[in-house]
Length: 303
Image (cartoon, rainbow, N blue to C red):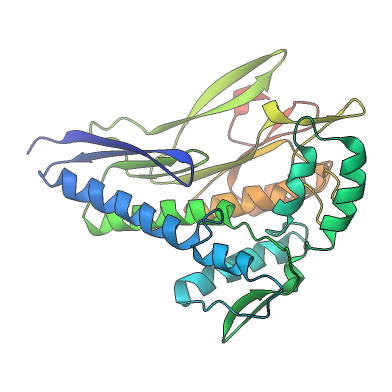
């Protein structure tokens, strides 16, 4: 039977999603439809910006004392986020989304100083109560954003779905989170491009991603400039200040959740600690420091 290439493009979680299948049978429509439906299911259930989602309901009920029930799938995602919080020594914090607005372009500095201090009283994963009744936020006005965990989880779920269908060659690309199955149908490698600084310009390097997953967190091209220094947009939930750490981190692993978790935690550490921590993980990674220097085994020719 001849292997044919099928593609689907749509938007989910506010991001462009691209699915590519190389299959021999003629049920591509069913497989692509089921894959998009799985993305839609997870988006409707967990999208932090949808007030009707589980996370949206938790945010709406913050400070009310009312629990939002968690099923096993939801509980496992909350436990995963808490594990990242622990690994980062409580600096990775999904409730710190509230303070991101103070670093938006055009933000008034005086408003920044007064408002940030007030909003920090509503930041802190330790203020989430999770038990048999479900989850609740203790303080009115708290906001939980789990999308950086939910998106790679959705990619992993779709990959598992494709494997159940017997798909042997596929690409699932959701912006900063990517996973593949096997190689392309003609035996070519799946290639993923990453942008990195190369002197005064930006270069793009492509690397193989066969039967692996990839995630990148941070954007060196969108770094904060404060008093002549570059900072990533990773913020400390303790004082609301930018962390003097890596501007961007890309990781290759067996699952998207593993890759995104490693990249997310690394960005919450100071630069030297992050590089040491990444080295100890035993994964393939690339990191861009505050001087636009590249580190890690992924881009050997980008150093």
